[in-house]
Image (cartoon, rainbow, N blue to C red; front, side, top):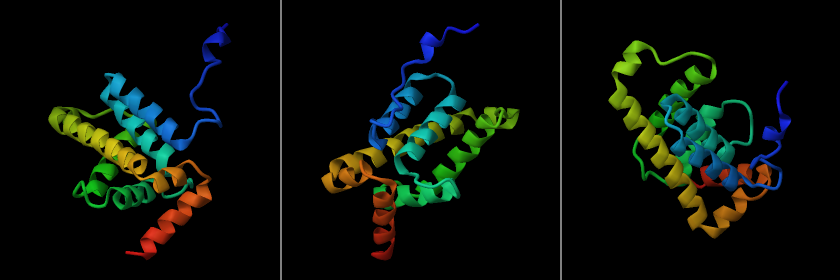
Length: 153
């Protein structure tokens, strides 16, 4: 029989906003040594921050990140797609195959870039009070922000 006292605490409450939840997952990713779990937590951080729907998450996320960081990381979408490929393998019970593990430097380089993407995305939002306010509001406000910013390009 498990002791349920260990499961009574969570940072992930209705009172926490997306920014706090995103930062919570970023901190978790930085603390854990397992690279597969790092990918999972960094991707979860971006989802907590930017997603408002449950379909086409990777594409939507890549577009929204590109929109927010405004070209500060070239080819950001390719990093997001690769990170989600790794994350998906881990989440769905697979492991890194031997050819992927042989490319360990690439895994480490990509995880470092994913950390940078998370940091820059969060920093950009926090540095702009209007944007920070939007990301502390309801999903509809976030969707409206991205619709307007896409139309203005």
